[in-house]
Length: 348
Ligand code: 13P
Ligand code: SF4
Image (cartoon, rainbow, N blue to C red; front, side):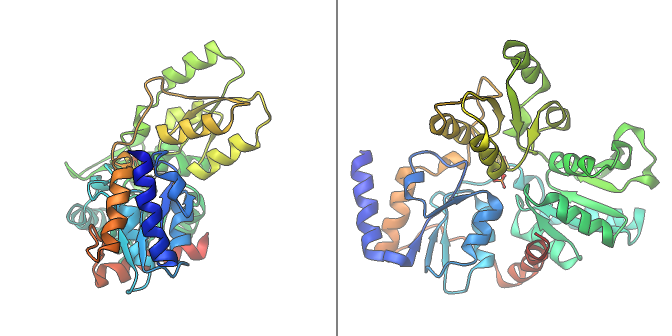
């Protein structure tokens, strides 16, 4: 039962004390949230985990976040992912082999005019490639700052793996769609958006996306606005371009939370992001009307793999001296990836 698992978790925590910490992403299931020592968006969790001294970090989130945490912590600290199947379909859309082959092609095409940037929702190997080629990582809360820095270095950015965050951020900076192109790593083809001239392209978007956020549409926005004219629409920048344009506000999970918290009682919000966060906002703000932009809701299946059973199992195994699912990035990859992450930290 839930009560029994709560007791088991409290028992292990009492023994391990400060040796164990649990960070949890805003998309985590409600049942694990009471055990979190820190909740946050990707950036906040990465920054926080680089400051803790605990020997055990049980990460309630997905694989790439656990990797980032391992990269940022010391050798004697171990990062565990309660369910190793908790991956990210977006991060899976770019692997090192594809990137080095794509890079070769793009270098031939455009010469030394490109800087690679990767969203933190990517494997450690992709971050390492960016670190080794003068690039950086970024998150949804600092994307613009990092992009501006990159344009001060080179004429073109190769942005991966999320085409939507790349396009949305660059458009905000005043870059027209005609200067953006989409790179398809499966077919090795570059297609300019709106048939712009290839030579003019300054943003090369890797053809990747988040399956959760791709589920939001402008048709949903139109329906909602018709039914509830005073509703405000807030979405994550992983949503498609037309959805972000049709929304009232867009921002990272932390920005979405802040915006809704700051709004006056009676405010009506439709939120375009993962379901667990939308349901939590709804529960925490009974004085406001919070709904999901998608009536069918959008769970992130991999985030949801972390449940109370897996959390209990993970920390009991530590107490038994048989930890499971340690996420360990090899030293060479970690040190290259760290360069990309540190460049982001210096800017943000
Ligand atoms: P943020 O929490 O940084 O906004 O990221 C959202 C996300 O999709 C994490 O997988
Ligand atoms: Fe990945 Fe999307 Fe899930 Fe975030 S919400 S972990 S980007 S699949």
